[in-house]
Image (cartoon, rainbow, N blue to C red):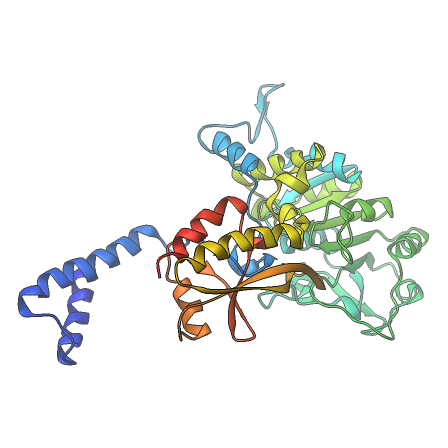
Length: 422
């Protein structure tokens, strides 16, 4: 009824403006172009798949990492029935969900233990609450970052009950800045990777190994929040999880849906003596993940263990794609669109890693510029978003451009079909 009323109201307004249909067509207009469309939209829900042609690989607004096909298969198998989420099959008794994915994570990172929570902010909150509540956490002023969506590291730290102890300056912090603050109240040295910005010029920052050495000398554990979750050592400027563990940090925390290319989650890895208190803390109940997250995460991690991730995990495939490979696809698509009346051109460009990872790092790509007649770039870009599924592109130099780095190769036909509806 609401859909009918809304459609009728719109028709009345159109008639009042002299734009309505003939009287005999009014009922059909209400039902076909108004109510049916509203009902279909309501039944469809607000979350929709889109084609990401922006060239931003880890696009937070577009859901970050696409999931690997093998992980989707695992998800379907686990979601379709019951599982041993909290059941010990060997003992026939209740088990703990916090053990899932741990063996894969320790194999990949070299850590003694690991635990998974619902995102990296939750990981940091759990660490600080369990290990530093009522005590001090030492952090460089240059690492007090905002992690997106208005959430700031100092705000997360305050919620934990820990006291923030800032040291150094925005651009220069030394090892003795940390050690000079140590007292009985000191719980942790916290290092935060400034993943969404860079400070250049007159700067200084202790290496991770230097901070670990200082922490051990003072009896203070070191926590490394690297954010992006790089499990490979190939991306310039991004610290890898394995390197953090190898440097001797006590705990490292990172995201599962950024460079790792899995589901939204936060992962904590490190010394067993510090992971176990996190596993047992009451807050763990509030930040734990479900069977669906574990299913996707374990299947994704298994691809890394097998050495296949660069070709099977979509985020890694996109990051490893060459400009030549993208150009070949762009030329094929451009040829199809030209036959449909589009004006097309190929141009060199740059893709972005996104997701607060590798700021300033451009990935060489080839862009496909598209236009039709005298239509403005803004109008074309808006039209692309009305398609089903919508195409999200970008405007560069007053031209709509498609970067196929972030369009899965198997989506090329869908993209061509949609753009043929001129």
